[in-house]
Every structure is written in C-alpha cells, then in structure tokens.
Image 1 (cartoon, helix red, strand yellow):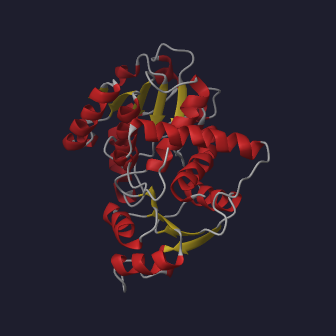
Image 2 (spheres, helix red, strand yellow):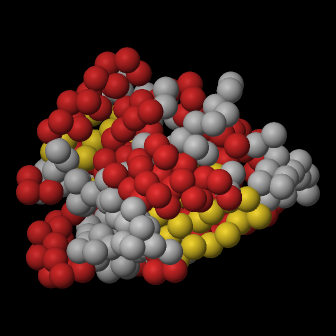
Length: 311
C-alpha cells in the first residue's frame, strides 16, 4: 500500500485498510527490531520534533524510531522556536519544510498541525493536539491485536472524560476498523454530537456499533476497558470538579468483574493517576497491558514514518 507523502493529522483521513496496514507494518517492524534487523528506511532523513506539551512516550518513540531507521531526529521545544508567536505558523512551516524531511507536532491547536501540513511540503504527523491523538490509537490497536489475535468484532469500552482527545480518537479509530465502541461518561462530558454522528457513519461501513451512555453497567461483555486522566494537560484548574464528577467511572476490580469476561484487559494511554481513574490494584494486575501499549507507541510511530517518508 502506498502512503508516501501522506500526513497523519487524524484517523478520519485514513480508510480501514490503511489503518490496518499501519498496524500490520508496525507488527513487522517490531519483530525485526527484536531480531536485530534494521533496514534504514529513513537513512539521511532529518525529522523535526516540535513539542509544545511535555511528553515521555511520544518524544521517546519518535526519537528512537527515527534513529532505528537511520535518520536524524531534532527536538524543538515550543519555547525554543517562534511558532505562532514572533513568526506565523505558516512561515515556520515553510522554513522547516526546506530543512527537514518530516515534522512531528505535539501541542494544543489542531489548526497548528494542519497549517504545518498545508505549508511545509513534507509529511506531518500529529503527536497530540487538544482534539486528536492518532498515533496513540495505532499503538492501542497493535496491543489489542497482539492480545486477542484480531480487532474486528472486539468490544471496546472507554470510561471517563468522553470529549477529550483520546475519546475522540478512539471513537474514530474503532468505528473505522470494525471494533464495537462504548463511551461511558457523565452527560456533561459526552462527545460532541457532530463527531458521534460522523463515527456512526463510519460504523455503518465497518459494522461497528457505537454507544454513548452514562451507565457504568454498559461495561458488560467488554473485551477492553480503557480510561484516561480526568483532567487533561491545560485543564488542571478543573481537577477538583472532574474528580467529583468522574468518581463513579473509576476502573476498579468490581467494575472489571462486571464485564463477565475473565479475559478482559485494562488499557490506559499513560501517564495514569492511580487512585483516581484507575485503582492501583487494576493497574498492576495481570489484566493490565499498559506497558505493552507504551512500548507499541515506538513500533506504530515507526510504521507511520516508514510508510509516509521511508525509502
């Protein structure tokens, strides 16, 4: 499949087959790395890594992935460049596009990563914005495939803030590839109606059922229970209100048991605030695959760059 030159800004822009291709490619690249096989797909490629928001997994995954494939990663902290301040995003994009072969952006505004893609002339990858986190979803899918052997038909349940970038991206990804998706959140924190309608249309094509509810009993039959922090980066001032609102949506042993399936797994994009969205007991249990998930950020991000930029 030819994805050369494509941006990854949101999984809305990718078909089911393209998403599954990236997951399969990541699986191959992971096996090759474990076997000590490196093909230098990014040899002599220079990749700019723009980080307005701090990061552990995204920064490390992009850095190691570029290096593994023979390229050169260059880290650019948000306060080190003039992006959108003394220089427009458009002008910064044009400068970076003349010096780099690809650009990763992790920041706040989706419009910024879209402007980088529009004006740079090189592939641009969204490492997280306030709206979407597409590379995380690819890592989640690889983890689920490794655990269950397939994706289509799995029952995926997300609990917590249903209108943050993770809930948005999980809904898009699941309904694109045929994973049944349930978002359990208080009515005040449920996803935007327009996005729900769009994902329902994706589901009609893939066979995915999308359910939005505030009823925690809807975890029944769930293969995956997933959560995220209750207050996203930049929303720390809302933490007290969120804790009060989301306490009933904590993933704990009692809730895991409500799925009725002994093989249900727990997932989290990390970092986790244990004792809030998930108990330490569940986080550290055999059902937890969070560190497989974290490692798979590397392999799926590598797959995205190899597919869109690699030789």
